[in-house]
Length: 327
Image 1 (cartoon, rainbow, N blue to C red):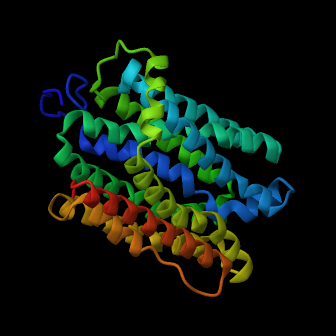
Image 2 (tube, helix red, strand yellow):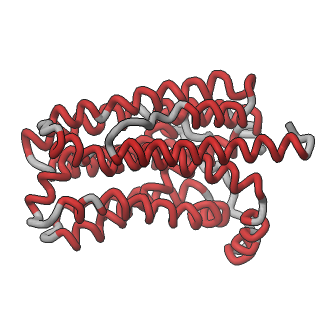
Image 3 (cartoon, helix red, strand yellow):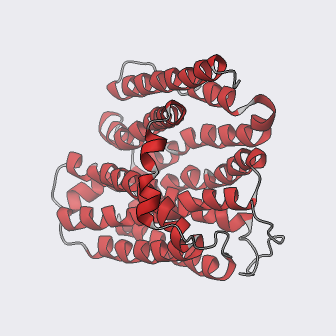
């Protein structure tokens, strides 16, 4: 870790304020779910099937996953600040593209481009690692993520009311305005926390095989992936279940979307408060076991399966570290 001066708000000579990091993580979460109550209305607007509009969640997440492979090495090479700002500008342009789309295919293309904002989420956490010790990083990241969860708590509820009052485009105009505000704050507050590296991108990518052959990496990776999978299965399927199975209006559906985010908020608070005391592995295991999942509906069955796989993954890490004498 480098020695950084104390963060001063809107001072680019210092590391970014924690509120800026929360906003960067939050805008990515907002882009993910604010429009979900509008999916049935968007399918009607573009005169297409609901299942096609569901791809707006899937392709966003797929591009998000792909970009995360590239964002780390690129930001190590050129610095955090520059990559974050470029990603935010691309997000703003993609949001305008969604608003001006004349058919579902064009909308889905620009929706995929919106995933550039993943850099904000990823690098807000990378900045924490730049400016804090390893022992404090998990705790501070937990608090940053806890603040971020306020967005998915209120985002779908706001999106539902915007859908009812003004139509689906209102949610994307709100995304654009929020993204523009975050971009301005980041421009003035985001000090550089990672000096550009002399190591080439090719050399960084050559180190990937070492990472991909590490059992510990795959244990944490699968624990995170399967745990998040339960949540994202809910994001993709809940609008259909709520609107078609239970006949909920958009504003009520958006309000109910906030329920899982309350648990997400509490989980991140617990991470920040107790991870240093209890240990990261035990915290991951507890969190994986608390993922909900049982019932008669296929959506909940999927959530159950992926949550159990998350538990199995972290148990693999714990068993291996005990065998190696690391735990």
